[in-house]
Length: 76
Image (spheres, rainbow, N blue to C red):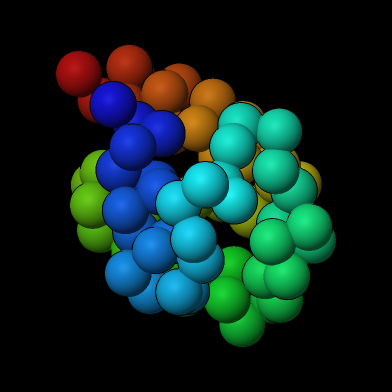
């Protein structure tokens, strides 16, 4: 569920092909630069109604999904 929403956000906002996005994908391997990360963080924060602190600590899609899972558990 969370991964699918993250994929959707990345495809819509960063024009990344869905099959390229896996839990093991790194932002670097997807050629996501710091500006793209900023945009992604804003979209994810809005979609999941969370605040992301220290996005620079996230290196993979799995890191992002795990972070969202933790934050949405706290807010639930």
